[in-house]
Length: 100
Image (cartoon, rainbow, N blue to C red; front, side, top):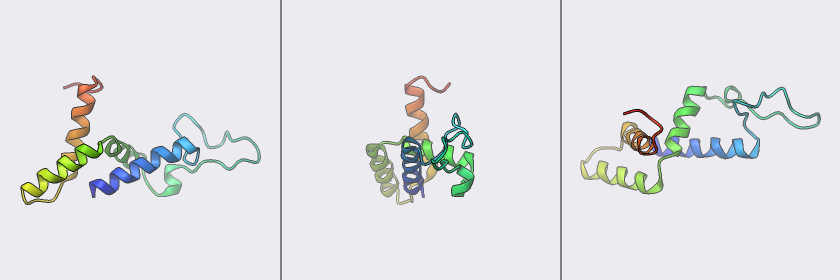
C-alpha cells in the first residue's frame, strides 16, 4: 500500500504544479474568466488528511523505498506504511523540520 500512496502523493504534487489541483493558498473561486477552476481534494475523492499523508509518502526517496522493501523481505514480512513514515520523519528531523 505504501508505494501506491507514494505514487498518489507524487501525482498530487505534480497536479498542483500544473494548476490542475487547488492549493491551500489558491481559492478555487478566484479563477480568471474562461479558465477552468482547479479541482479540490473533495472533488477528486480524498480528504485533506489523506492528501497530507500521501505527500509525506512522496518524500521517501527511491533508495529509501528499495531499502525498506529489502528490510521487509529479509524479515519475511510485508513492508508496512509505518516503516516508510519512519523514513520521512528521520529525514525531516535531519533537516530540522521536526522536533525529536
